[in-house]
Amino acid sequence: MRVASLITLALGALSTLSAAGPTDKPFKPEKGFTSLFNGKDLTGWTKAKESEESFSVKDGAIVANGKRCHLYFTGMFKGKPAAFKNFELRVDVMTKPVSNGGIYFHTVYQETNWPDKGFEVQVNNTHGDWKKTAGLYNVQDNKEAFKDNVWFTETIRVEGKHVTTFVDGKKVTDWVQPDDWTGPKGNPGRVIGAGSTFAFQAHDPGSTVMYKNVRVKLLP
Image: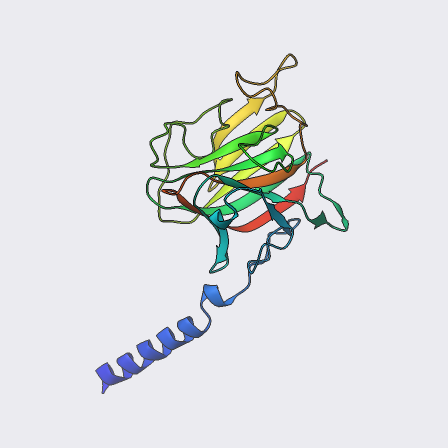
């Protein structure tokens, strides 16, 4: 009787957990943050005019898989055109093995090619490129890899000319743009203030990167 009672209680607990699982609850941003992605479709976002099929929405996430393409935030923010200068951006990210991607900031919509303006914060844990997740690409690169197949939070914080990035709260990049900065070799548009919005990158057909719970907080 005791064993049967324990089994009944256990099954009841599992049923309760299943009914109230975290996947049933809509994402709620942290205090002070505003969501930029509704988890259902790409409202507020615009695909570049190449390989548009490389971006889709599945199970509440933006999926980047296919030939090169970039997805830009072009929507309104609190009733005004997007103008993200000083901010903290948080994105939950998952990479599949041997995948490459990126999150751009201070960029502008561009119909084709790699974005000329703004900075790329790398998303790459086991792809062949040695420049790994949360490094400021070609500016202050990171060699430390994180894990594939798990969700992690990538944070980008910009205050004036100071850029910091974090993975699950661990600081990865801490960079201040020098007064005489003209961008790295081959990337003259990689300067603070070159643009004012964000973009996600679909890198190549062998890469699959998922982005969800995209939220931002403006800073003074």
